[in-house]
Image 1: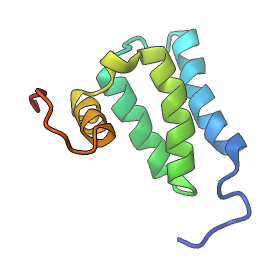
Image 2: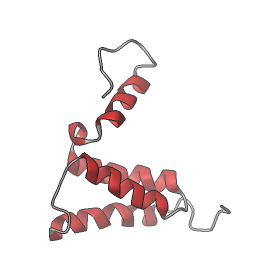
Image 3: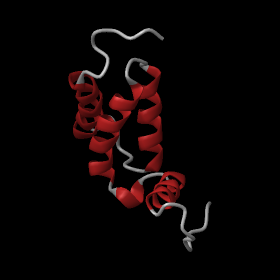
Image 4: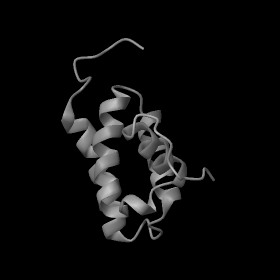
Length: 94
């Protein structure tokens, strides 16, 4: 996909993250669980554009509401394995 002048524009990424916070505040999203994070990240990435910037900013905002331990387990495991440089951890994949 060719780039546009808006690629990497934080305003777009924040608008995606704030949208989920708005829906939560209005009661349109009632479940604050791991599937909420996955559903909204899928929606954000489908918008195309600068998906890594959009996902990072919006994902951070969602994560601040959900909390680290309410993120999908597979993401927590991959994150912990990555930040420990592949050292052996006593973490079981689900």
